[in-house]
Image (cartoon, rainbow, N blue to C red; front, side, top):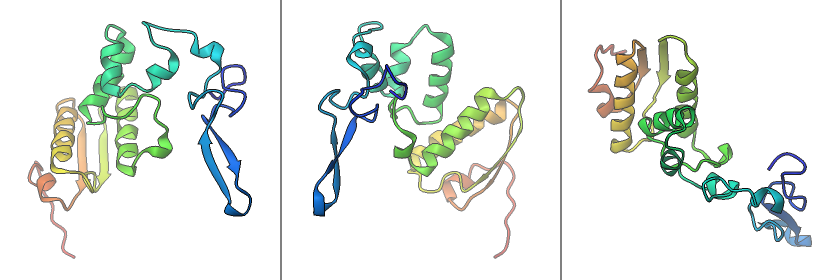
Length: 173
């Protein structure tokens, strides 16, 4: 959707067009040509296992894992996304729609998938803003990293997170 010829020529792959409402300002509305799908009709006609690119990009990462089952390179990354607790995100979701915590977890995941060997990972409040069930998923992921030889250093205030520390250093205020 960001390359000439593949993207919708009307909205340039944005899926939306800006309507000028004169003194009221502007408003973004769904592109009437591609209906928000961002791709040209020619691209949308191509299907893989009964789905076009728009349908695939609208799969959750959990659904994408099932859809691409058997494609080892793809499912390896998608399985890691499930382990880190982000399987609800959409495959084609824009990074501008992600929270800071989601972006941080995806950056961690990208690093771990590329890493040639275990490393020391340092976090500042990695569980800040997470619900208790999300903290549990994060702790399970961190435990998996520890089992692979990683060292994790985290500054944290959440009691649920601190309770699982192997070594604890308390700093006075």
